Length: 493
Ligand code: SAH
Image (cartoon, rainbow, N blue to C red; front, side, top):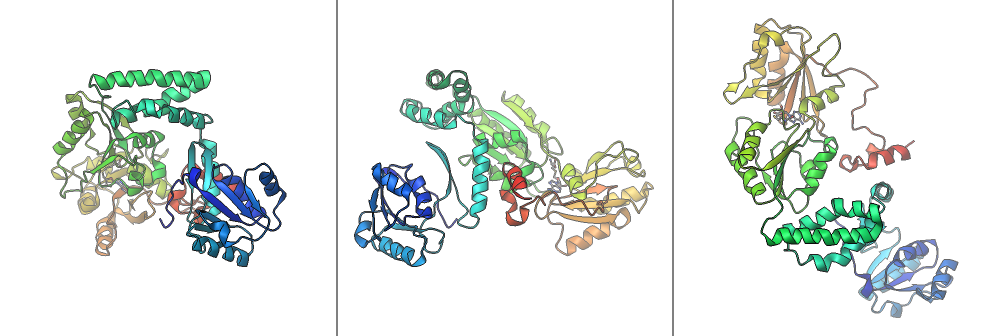
C-alpha cells in the first residue's frame, strides 16, 4: 500500500488549484463539496469557475499561479492540462510545504484523489494507487448500486446520537447498540416512518441496551459453525459473509484460506487451531473449551471450518460442548471440497445411468487408514470423493483392486480445488499409487487433495475454467467480488 488513505478535515484547509479548464472544473466539483477555502489561479477560467467565483464559493485569480498564492495552503492541484505550467505550480506548492497533486501525473503527485461514493457522512474512497482508474470507477458504480438509499440519513442520525450513546459502556455493549441500530432497527424504522421514527427507535434501543448493561447482563454469546468453502472467497455463502462481518472471535482450521480470513471483521480476534492430518494439532478438547470460553463471555464466535462444516469436520463434538454449556449455536453450510473438485473437472457428482449415489470417504481416521465397504466401491460406475486420502493412495488402490475393481477405473486428484493454484492429476486406479508417489517426489501435491474415484476431467473445448470471467485478464482474481462481476460482464462486450 504505497498510497495510504486518510480523511482530511477540510474545515481547516486552504486549497490552491492552478488551471481553469475541464480538469480544474472536475476537481473543483469535488472540492466544493467540502468547507475548504479554495483559490483558483488561471488567466482564462471556464464559465463554471467564473460562476462559482461570482457566488463567492471560491477566490479567483485571473493570472498564472504565483509563489505568494501558496502561502498557508495545504493542498495544491496542478490542473492546467499543460506539463510546463503544471510543473511550475507543483514546484510552487512543494516549496510552500503543501501536498501536491498533478492531474494524470502519478509521479509528480504526493497524493491522489480516490473515486468517492458520497453518502455523507458515509463516504467510501476507492483507489487503485493509480494503476487502474477505470476499475475504481466500476467498483464505485457497483457500490453505489448496492447501498440502500437511506444509508446517509441513518449515518447522519447516528452522528447526532453519538454523545447520547457514549453513556453506554465502551466496547462490546456500545458496539452491540450500534449494530442493532444500523442492521435492523434503523432501516426498518426509516422505511416505516422516516427520520422521526428512526430517532424514536434510537431512543428505545438506547434504553434497552442501557438497562441490559446496568444489570450486568451483556448480550448473550453465540457460536456460528461456518463453512468457509474450499478456498475461493467467492464460494462463501452470503450468510457466512455476514457472520464474518459480525464476528468478535474467529476460530479457524488450517485449511481456511487467507483470502477468506481477510473478510473477518477487522477488530475480530483470530485464533488458528490448525489440524494437519496425523500431525501436531490443537487438541479437540482445547478447541471445545475455547468456543465455550469466548461465547460464554458474550462474544459472537465464528467457528470457521474449511468446506462444509458437516463433512469430516468433527462438528458434533463441538456442538455437544456448546449444548453442555447452554450456548446457542447455528450451522452455516459451505461448499464441500468434492463439489469444488467436480466443478474443476467439469463433471457431475451423480449422473443418470452411471451412478445414482456418491460416497464421501475419509482416507484415514483416528486409527489410521480407514476401512470402507470396498466391495461396493469396486463396482463399475461407482463415484466416490476421498478426503484426506493422499497418504492412503496405495492402501485405497490395494483394497479396491483386491475386491475386483477395474484397474482402468479413472481417478482424478484435485489439489487446491477452487484456488488460483488448483491442479488436476488424471490417472487410473492401476496407476494411482505411482502417480501420487511421483508427484510428491517432484514436490507436487503439497496442498489439500481430494481424490475423485470414478471420474476423469471432461475433455470439452468449450469448458472454461470457472474463473475465466470476462475482464479477468485485467483484474486480479481477488478483486472480482460478486458485486463487481455483473458490472464487468456488462462493460465487456
Ligand atoms: N469440511 C471439509 C473437509 C475437511 S477434511 C470439506 O467439506 O471440504 C480435510 C480434507 O478436505 C483435506 O485433506 C482434503 O482432502 C479436502 N479438502 C479441503 N479443501 C480442499 C481443497 N481446496 N481442495 C482439495 N481438497 C480439499
